[in-house]
Length: 248
Image 1: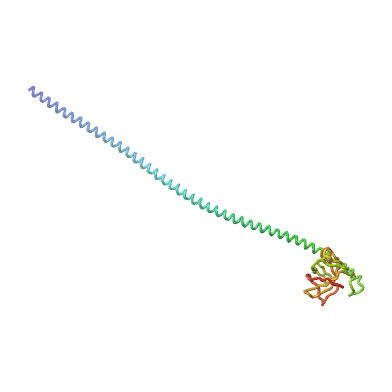
Image 2: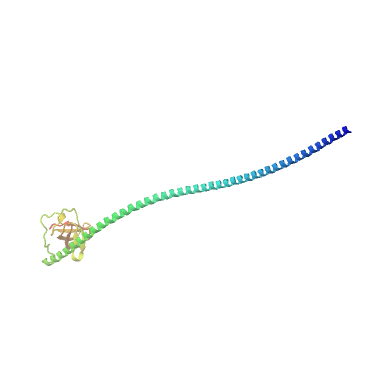
């Protein structure tokens, strides 16, 4: 009985050990499974966080890529604008060169016109002085004519002032520059400088045809007032006619 009780106690102890072992094994398995579940949850959370971080990084990369593309497009637009500005500047420079050349030509033309106006002004002044001299000579010659008319003994007589002996003109050609038909006066373009002397007689010739006989009455330095003595065929002398010395 004792031996049987021992064996029963041993069997009971063995069974109790087995049961307790299985119990603790089961407890260890559940704890391990729970641990694995907790680690899986942590790993899943870490993976989710990493995926979210990756997605944020990809979004940042896309945003940076878009910014880079925008900057590249803006740089291309600025480069195109710069090229257009350079082309426009070159065109303006060319237009400025053309305008400068045109302005220089206009200034040169203006200076030439000013010089021509000055020359014409000098010529006008000279001609005005000449006209005043001729008017003075004509007035003096008119006075001389009136004096000669008063002292002439009769119409058609010889000149009151005889031609000087040995008078010779140095001018190659003497021409009429003005005529006063009512007073029978004309002005010749030769004076004392050319050897003209009072009393010298001339024949006025128009196109190789004699038109009048005249004699010097009022001799000045560069011109002479003359009295018309005789007209041929009623023709009056005109400016430009030649005067030929007439010997009596």
